[in-house]
Length: 68
Image 1: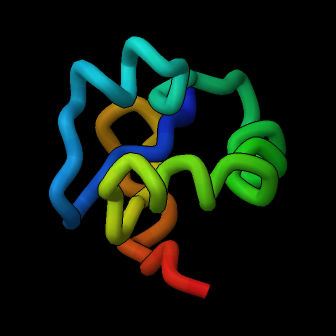
Image 2: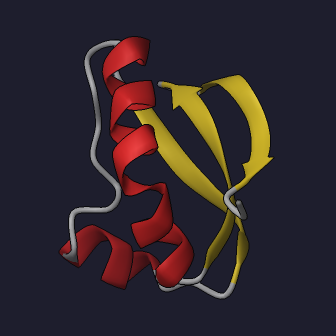
């Protein structure tokens, strides 16, 4: 299994997110959630407005805004 936060809205560049390691994959949902608690502001600063969590091809967390 592989978990990944995927951008849903905003004015972002996927290439930029990948180059700056803001699109990592995780082996557990807990690892993904822990990472998001640390890097949500980096995603927001990169133009991402909302993200959703995916396990392979299944959405496990609906879109959530990154604004505080």
